[in-house]
Length: 176
Image (tube, rainbow, N blue to C red; front, side, top):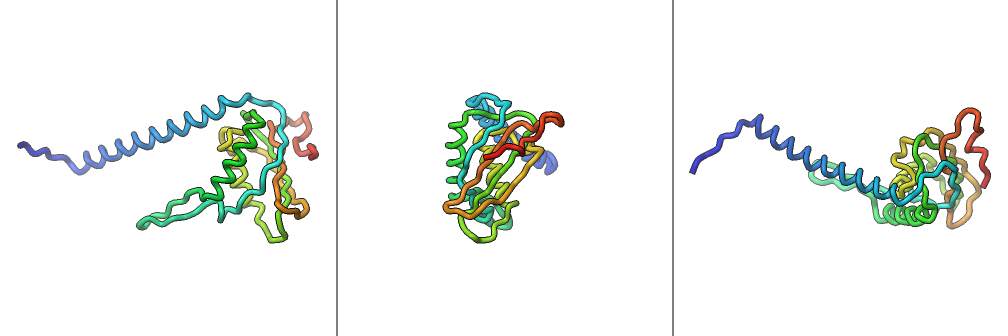
């Protein structure tokens, strides 16, 4: 029986390469899943207006778990349910967008509590991205959010489309 000696530096390098293969495979799988979602839809050049349910707050959308000394963030059951509802609604629309985008959001709150409008963006934009509306929320170059009256159960009206050029007017002129 022969013993194999391995330099600590070589062992670290081998472990790093192995981790890289795992992460590379995960990234490829995520990219392929996004591409498959995009292929289901036709690319649109016209804005889309639709009504979505009121998103959960970030405290309810994401959860945090501590494992050992490390914290892990994951999407909660309420976040997954909201994301599934957005996917269901977006599939009926059947389009996707490429390039620079603009979004207008009109929020109708479900009750009179104080809500953070910034917190609504994350849940809304991540759910639309996951539904296949666009490849990445970094494509959104112009955004507008307005608060309307309070009415149960609360909802979000959005207009999403390509960002118009200087001479083409503005997406934000669109009325609901």
